[in-house]
Length: 256
Image (cartoon, rainbow, N blue to C red; front, side, top):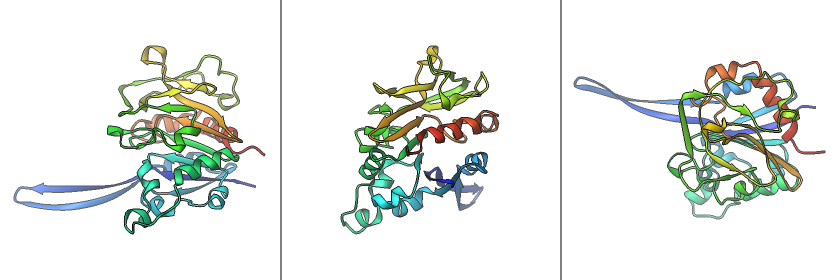
């Protein structure tokens, strides 16, 4: 039976003003950033519910039972505010469950959680993702800085396998060299967690892929994007991308 994964976030809306001499007009476009990622992982043991950022504000699970319907949750480029401020709180000044605490409890009773990097992941651009000192950070395998944690790498940096991690099941059968990245969220590996992939030592050795356990559950931090711009199309097309992520999901889904 297929495992269910909830991927929340990885979408945005852009507005633009087009000026042509005396004339101008506005336009609005909406973007889905995870379609290529889901396509790359399709046809396996996992089915994905893709909940866009604006849908998650109201629709992200707000009860233990609703979370338990999923074998793992992926948070991708969705700031803490979107989960902390559902309409009943933000608009109607009514109480609502704290969904960051619900996620922590979900992991501790056996759920899987992966945080994917991005401008609104970990602490994010201008520190605005705001996951530091939250219940979500408490169960992640990495600690989050209190400031803008983006590490832009416009020259392109090839990550490496962490020391002592080459024989881990998540990395089994991968090609020796990984494609380049254009950025990560800088984090710090927690005691007891394990780094599988990192930036090279000369680039600070920061975690790219870290895994850990909390209670009965397992969590992972993938500190770059799952699509452009930090993750180039060449990385998505890399022959090791699907095996890496399938094996990561195999590891992180709740234990029997």
